[in-house]
Length: 427
Image (cartoon, rainbow, N blue to C red; front, side):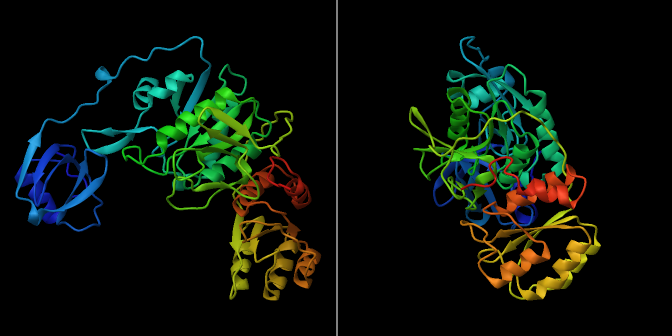
C-alpha cells in the first residue's frame, strides 16, 4: 500500500477507508468529488487528503468533512494499451533527449505521480500531433530537477549532443526543467559553438497533468522549428504570450527566465526572439543573422567562478573570502551603467594582483554597461575590471566558467570574455 506523504490522522483515515495513493475514488463531503488520491508533502498538516479531479486540478479535502469514500475502478496506463508507433518514411527524423522536468510527462495511476513519457510510443500517445511533423526517437540522459544540475551535467548534455553532430537527425530537442534552463542553454552555446544542427531546449511551466499545461504546445512547436527552419545552433523554445497563440524561439545566450510561473516566463533580453511560431507561420527576426562558423567543440568548464551582486552595505570581506578560497574569476552585477562603491576598490585591486579575472555586468535587465561615463566606472577600468557590455549576468557567469577552463592565464581569459562567441553581446 502507498501512502506517500501522509501521516497522523490523514494516514489513519486512508488505512481505515482501505484506499491508498493512486486509487480512483468517489468522495462524499459537502459535494461529491471523483478523482485520484495524490501524494502529499510530508511537512503539510495531517488533516487533509489531496484529490486530483477529472479536469486535472488538485484539491485538498478536510477529512473531518468527508462522509464516505467509494473505491472506483482505476484507469490503467500500461505498455500493452499504448498503440504501436508507426513511422512515416517521408518525414524527417529528430531526437528528443530527456534530462528531467515536467515536459512530456504522464500520470502514473499506480502512485498518482507525474512521470516522464520516455519511449517514442509513449511520447506519441501523450502528444500525438508530433507524429505529423517528424519521426521522433527518444533517449533518457538523466532525470533531475534543473535546480540540481551542475556544470558536470552541462558537460554530459554537450557530449551527448556532440555525438550526434554529424548524424542523420534533422535536429535535437532537449527536454529540461525551466529553473536553470538559461544556464544550460548558454553552456551549450559556448561549448558547442558552431553546432551544425538546430537544438531546441524545451520545458514546461505548468505540469502536463494540468489543463493549462504548456508542455504539449512547446514540444510541438519545437519539432516544427527543427523541421521547418534552415538554421542551426542552440535555442530555447517556450510560450511567447500567456495564451497559446505564439511560441518564441530564443537564442541561447540572450534568454532569461523573468517570471516564476507564467507560461511566457522566458524572454529575449535586449532584442526580439530569433523566431516566432504562430499558427502555420514561422517568422524570423530580421536582425537575427548568426554567422555559421566552423564547428569546434570545447566541452570543458571550471566552476571556480562567482557571481557577485553588489548592494549598499556590501562587505568587502566577502570578496576577501572569495579571493582566499581559490576562485579564479568574479562576475559583478553592478549598479546602473556598471558601478560598485569605492569601498570595493582595495579588494578588487587585491583580486587583480592575485590574477583573478573581474568582469562587470549590470543589475538592470536592459541596457549596456558603460564604465567611461562616471568617475567610479573609470576608476574600476583603471583597476583592471573588464566591462561586459549588455551580456546577461547569468550568461557571463557561464561564459567565465567556460573561458576559465579553455584559457592558460587571466590575459587569455580576458581576451575570450571580450569576444562575441555565441551572440552573447547584442547591438
